[in-house]
Length: 457
Image (cartoon, rainbow, N blue to C red; front, side):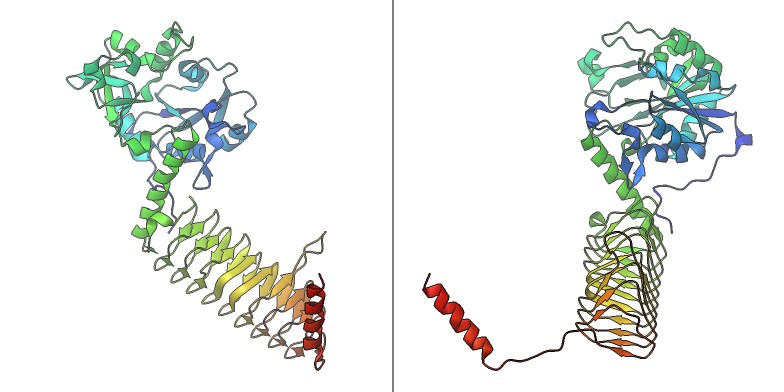
């Protein structure tokens, strides 16, 4: 199971007119107070624009992304879709007009890169509404729990008559629950014409896409609204709104995981990435974080307060509690990674165990090997990383320090507290520690000397 926020079947191009999606992604996101373009901020480990691109690709024949100057990072993310640059940020209608030459001859929908959670189903509903005989313009609408300062949609007999901004609305109009989400769809030639007619005689001196609605109504065109849930249509303009959108994405991911046969003991405490992959019968205890690139196989159990990223967990494996699996780690079938154990770039063979207080970095541990508490692979010499190779069915005693590069053969035993700097042959017993000496009476004498020194000040 892939815990994607949504899956959908691509639309059949033969069943409708060609359609182009224009995604406006030129905004700097001033309220985010970030040097990073707003649409690059992540949701569940994935840039928000990526969601909209992937969902739009399931519905539209062509995607055009409008970016601002110097937004090479956004343009690279948009590839292979066409990109145009809005050299001067003069408003949303101006941004859409930059793509007018790429509208084609079918229908055109204008979407917003900072409004990334619209599902393919809702996009299809928008396109289908526009394709209804007599409808010249379709727009997306929602009924938010708190309408706040959203523009209200004034309708009559099922047709949109106008959109009134909150600041200009009467008390009666402010009581309307249906709000404008800003997404529009129209036939390409009409859309081009209306964009060319939009004026900037407003307080901000900008060209607003919403003015297209009034132009369509003035021409006698039917304008209809397509409703979608608020969680799909919420915009992201601040860190607080980014957190709200993250909560929506996590809710979708958790629901998808549980629908696919994963047990989340306390779903609201588990955080997933957009690409987290689970097989059925996985058990996830509370307070677990899955970073990007994690695959968990059938029957594995991830115990509380563990953090996984860029790793594979084999069938029936047991992880945690309080375990950390870093990128490049691969835990074999029925292997154990216990409390306060960290793996980085390490393969743990089938049935192998590292149950306590251990760091295994850049290592390969064979099947059935037991790694004792406090074991460390010393993989970094200050300049280069080196590997540790441990064979199958080995016993690594507690507090062993394995100084890489080093290889330990199958079935070898490493005595507790050893420092291993040379290879160990298969079946051998290795000691690498200083010989213990006991000095009779020296402990008591030392304590007496220290006590006298303290008394003398």
